[in-house]
Image (cartoon, rainbow, N blue to C red; front, side):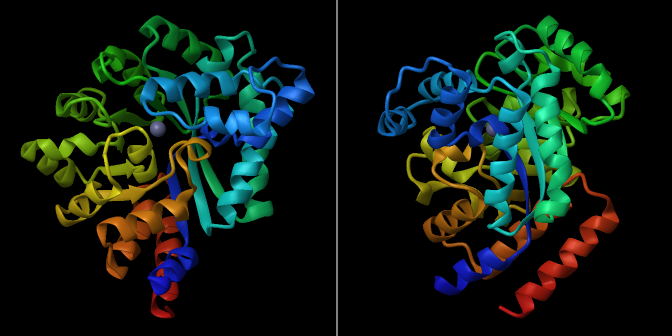
Length: 337
Ligand SMILES: [Zn+2]
């Protein structure tokens, strides 16, 4: 096990499913609230930590949106993003494709440019500072109406050459991908990459909609695809990557026990699964922690771990040349471990 942990630490990895707002650690929440004079219902760090332990999706979303309220300035978004990059650099993450939720900020009165300028400033500095490249993905909150997504799309117009893709997040049940078919078409016409959360809590039918209706380039989560053999075949044949988040699945009771996590089954079915942290400040760990705990719980082998690291690059939106460089390095590191 120690050998496998050392291999996990040493392998270069990409993270493809990460909500920047979900990397807000309790310490930062207190710090940003203090410097911005934002009232929060917590007096001590222990009280924030207690609020960070929830038992279901709605409790999580409540604290997640409350956490956002302390993010007020470009500097806050910069510092949040930079802190995340610094943490994952220590995990040997070399490339990130990160989500942000503009509607979580414009909905409480911040101009669109505040989050994106702060985030981009940190991401643009990351290659020199941490050796990390990036893609930025703008997510729409699916519990809100389609016309509000279009309003956000309009606000994003001046930044569309800096935004690489769009995504869909927040409460899945009752908000099928088809609700956003038109905005996905608009983004596709602009040449943006398309991803969507599907099959985390929602049924296989939602994943079908994401694949055939939205024509996504990648599926976020996708766990419940395994309930439908034809869907598994469709995803495999299309070579679509699944950005799977084991510790998130455990926190939100998508699985009752990490031992029941489908990660190994996904790989054995020939699906291109990857390991990601989703909202690491809330779900108990960054990328390597997700690798380690999953490997232990479901019995991943050395080969599985190497495949997962490779999938994180081949499933990324890096160019084929850039992907090849990372894959060659994975082979070199694996050979020396
Ligand atoms: Zn997510």
